[in-house]
Length: 180
Ligand code: HEM
Ligand code: HEM
Image (cartoon, rainbow, N blue to C red):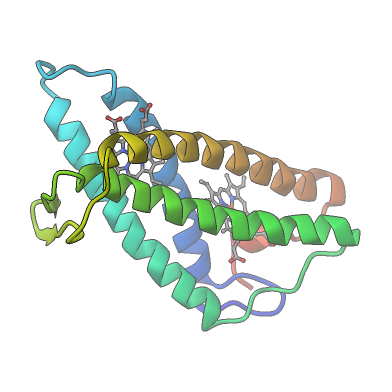
């Protein structure tokens, strides 16, 4: 099924979840790699362009994903103690919030000088009509912290999914891999 059901995620949620997770891990690695390059490295400009373009594409995906989340039911909580169910909900909300702030901070670094971002040299995403002092440095610091925070959260989130698979032996991970 394309849509979520009360017992499982649907294919649209599943595909968006895994495409975004892969792209985020890739962007994290690319981000760490590209900030070590110097102006004279062949891939200095290309890596940054790719990072920004893919990042903004993810922002579009995230907006669609949040819209889909609200126009669709979410599978019922998995059996388990109440604190575990609440932590899972809080973690999901946190992942959405940090993803959004990370993407927006990236946009603010790249548009700090007032120039638009050319997404894959196809679409120009303009800068905001205003900026704040030290926008590039402040957004850069925030971006770096949020990127590490998102990785830490994703690790805990993935550990929880592994626990559901091997300890609880329930549908936790399976329902994000295959729709019923
Ligand atoms: C989930 C998406 C993203 C992840 C995981 C991510 C991750 C990272 C990481 C790990 C760095 C290196 C930070 C450092 O060590 O200083 C970085 C740098 C950077 N990112 Fe992202 N990023 C994402 C999205 C974006 C977006 C959407 C943009 C802009 C449109 C962007 C623009 C930049 C820029 C300009 C830098 C270089 C900052 C500097 O030179 O200090 N990023 N990113
Ligand atoms: C950057 C990486 C990731 C992000 C940002 C992320 C984000 C999310 C979000 C926001 C949800 C909630 C979906 C909703 O109900 O609206 C979710 C669900 C889920 N994620 Fe991830 N995820 C990531 C990586 C992973 C990995 C690596 C695994 C497994 C190893 C995983 C397994 C799951 C599972 C099983 C669910 C469904 C939970 C349930 O049934 O309640 N995720 N993820």
